[in-house]
Image (cartoon, rainbow, N blue to C red; front, side):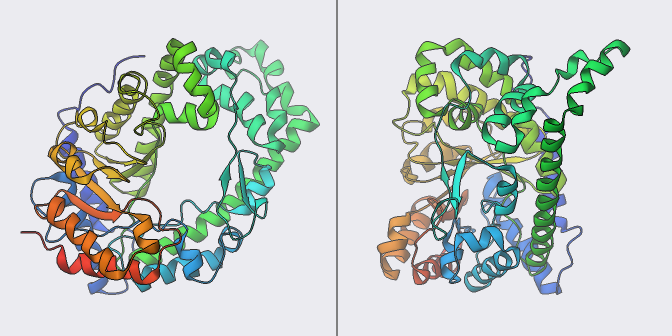
Length: 447
């Protein structure tokens, strides 16, 4: 693959400023008052200053991850949030207005249940379909790509997903196995054999099922778009404008599965590396397209299999970091800011992931030592985190305040820091969340 994303381009910083200006402008938002518009822009300004490392923000931004907490807090269930779009809006409004964080972290992880019902999705169990209505969804681990299929993925990623992967994870799309090889339809004599598969009743039904699911997805998206506009109109910017993934995680999470990808590092290292390289452009384009479409600067990238203990340092440097870094740089070169959520601990990775230009990315840490993170990654990137979920669930308000005070004193006083939770706040005490947000806003004034 052509080495397009090995270094940050000279104009990337200018593009970053342009993208932040677009986000700050609030174009298309109907603000309910001048005060709401001012609050919206001030909150984005705090985040911008924290990320760019040019000057400290006026205070530490407070941007916790709600996770599935809002459902329990509103006296609802995950099932209701997935199937009743009006209820989902009510649930998230209550969370946002009762706790007033600096950003609106939308219900992006709450997939509309009717859509996955229509597709007969098999990659997860979800409330009412394999788990109780009160519980969040559960990933179904498996090898959805066979080890011998690496070359098929490498040769044609889109075709592989369409004709092989989708039929395995969407029950109603099994007829997609009959999809033609589209690059073969390039002469008049190939038109008929190319379109003939679409004439079969099975494939036509699959396409109609897809259309029904798409119609429901559009109804959900329109509801969420209207809701987001309302929230932003009250002065709360969204914290993410889109998402992408590390190429290794695409393969290890949902294609080969954990056991499969671990074996592949030993048995099929060259194919694994080539597949990661092949998926890199798609991960760059996914993040860039979403950020540009939403007029937003931040692109969320959850990191699953690069954590301490999953692979050795040598394996991290060989299989995980090279293509992840290319995704980061590819997104940065378009003026966007990757926000990398390092789930678990990254204490053994800090020196490696510090190999980035200054002020172009943010690292969100879960259980990583934040003082060490500040001393390493914090020299080149904003760090985010990491109030522990066990503390929010079982601690006292004073203990939460003390932890936040320590974070702000040790890593946030001079900027380059956004206070957040280590993960979604599932099961947290409402009074502890309130204490975390209110205390940190007052105490986190930067010097």
